[in-house]
Length: 160
Length: 87
Image (cartoon, rainbow over all chains, first blue to last red):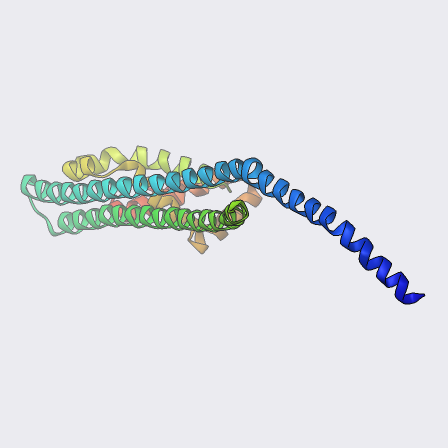
């Protein structure tokens, strides 16, 4: 009895198998079509936006470097201006007393220190800005990598 | 005390002291950026524990503004080698 039932099952499966296989093929084709034609453009837009963001970060970084270079040149010229001013005051002083020279040197040192302080502050701020941008660049690179995983799967699924 | 208030008062004191400095060191005065000087004096005062405790005491008796002016004048005198009275 059991044997005849099994034989009947086997015969039934034999008849049903093409139907199931056909369904599975259709389903996988539909998923592939969905992935290829539906999600792929969406993923591509995401990746394009990420790439644009990375380009933007690189442009800001370059712009900050340019500004920092301008600031550096400005500080160098300010320093020269201070040196020239120090000399000019000494030359134009009719009676050079030791008190005046000491006071003059002290004021000059204060001005140079103030200039150096400002220069260091701006350099530190520039470094902070650049490290923030580097962190953003890293995060965007990781996002790009994450986005590339479903994209690869989609392309693989779309292959015949 | 807010940094902006300190900076504003230091700026006023520097402005008052500046003519004497210009008279004694005319070329140097032209080359020095007043804003930068204000910034430096404000920063050095804000980091000075003696100034902080003086301000804390002044706040109790309502003399904050006068105390800032006094300390700022002292700092400017020392930095620019001026002999203006701090009071």
